[in-house]
Image (cartoon, rainbow, N blue to C red; front, side, top):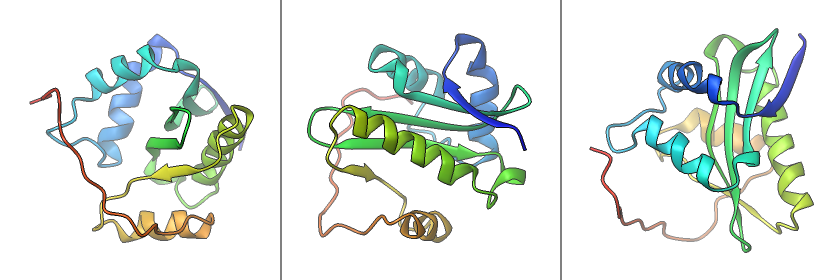
Length: 141
């Protein structure tokens, strides 16, 4: 498997949105096109794309605001899951964040997604004793 990771390119958008749909990441309150546009306005060099033979099979939106790093939209094409692709994407995210001096990475996972929770735990991620609160400032609906 000739797997490479590169930065996002504008020609990737359609394939990325399809990948996110295939992975069940798209929800009504997050417009994927707007999320891509927002990411491109903030640290676009941390929008990671994983490919095999020029075909997009994985993504990760990575960010760092000076205190914590975050990973969103980690997606792996279902037929390539459980083959180390997600782990490689996270290793690249960690590497890039570490190069920025980032001391800790956070991920948010829906509490009903037991398989993804297990994946992150295998990578050494632990559940923090925090309550996650959110407030939508701009509606995508």
